[in-house]
Length: 192
Image (cartoon, rainbow, N blue to C red):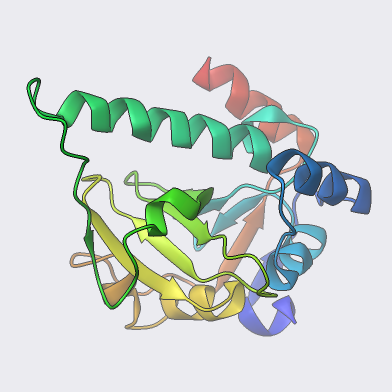
């Protein structure tokens, strides 16, 4: 399937079934089928040179569980910093469409753009796929990305990217550049 989404597919460190099972156990929910396929076929790496997708791998800088928790914690800290000191009001997100108010409470972050936008699944129990959303770098704007991972990626490769990532972004190349374990370890060292 992914060979039809990417013209140039260079897989990275792929997730094993054990990696996927570990992630599901630690996160507490089943990973969607399209994401599982991506993790085992494409692995860790970047879509179109701009969007890094985190997958269940034994290298922390690219591991879904580690990155999901880190991003959620960082977003929560940033939102606390944005809150007025005397206000008990929760942070208000500008969410496109008819998403319900609890959308951000169900978020599981699984990727990040080069400019600092965060990709997340709307983890809704009982569904085989979770809608994909993007929390923009402003931590206020939330855009709908797609109903599954192939739809999301195809949207990034076309004019739909304007609705997914907002103004100023052009279609991404139909490439996936994977990272091997050594490259991921270097990324972790550089971030430390």
